[in-house]
Length: 194
Image (cartoon, rainbow, N blue to C red):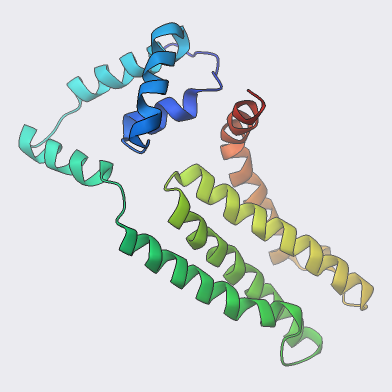
């Protein structure tokens, strides 16, 4: 497929293709697709892939697509909110004060950062099911809390985040995944500006 320049509406078009747009927004996006060559190419590429994709049977593919495209039930969203809130509520005290001192407190805070990032990601998934947004929220939470914890560690005389190779690898892993989703962040930024 020919590489195209990104359009600020590309994410909305992708959401339309995935069946994730509310009814009110679908017609707005379809109207845009009629006037935008980039987004028209996205729709055409999807149609081509859908027609040529191998499946075990046409019925199985239709059933599978129906399951993917269904909007999550309100009950599922409430459960996601409850679970995410519970995880976040339980990780916050560990991050803020913990119940120990020294290296053990540092390790506990480190675990709390990951728990908080997962909790915020679960809360985010109750609002949106776009994997790029969920990853962005999780990685952003991790990076912000890691920065706060690093400042605290340095201020309290702890050895700092750069003396432990695992910390460096974790931050590097987060930055590499962030690099993967950077185009999505740029699209979100452009869409907010439009």
